[in-house]
Image (cartoon, rainbow, N blue to C red; front, side, top):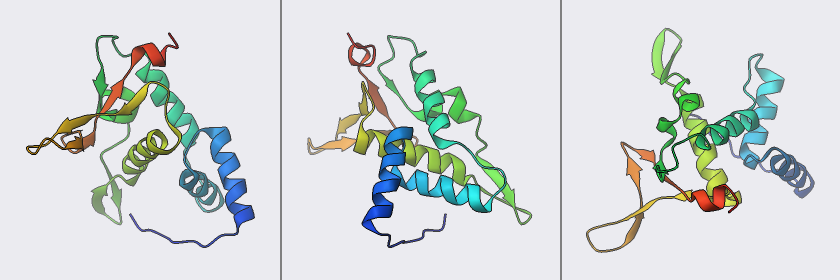
Length: 146
């Protein structure tokens, strides 16, 4: 997935931040969403997609305290690969959604959801992954506002 480094004014960043806060998505997704609307006909509403993921998380069994995005049907509905120029390539959309969800949890916070940790062989706390997918912990008492 190509990267672009942009230098923007404080005023533009503040406007992007305000929009990101309204949509409850990271600033970079607001920028991507805006650029996609300008240059690509078929776009995805990232804030709506994140909202669908969060709604689906709320339907998980209460005894389940850990999950990865692969546990969610909404996320699994995105294809793992796409055909581009006659070649099969990994889907950038799935990666973008996963990174956005992780960034949202890390920067803004998601009520009752945090990254799962494990201990390495030296007893140090490290982020937990399952088949290279980030694992999250659900605190149902916080998530449900108890």
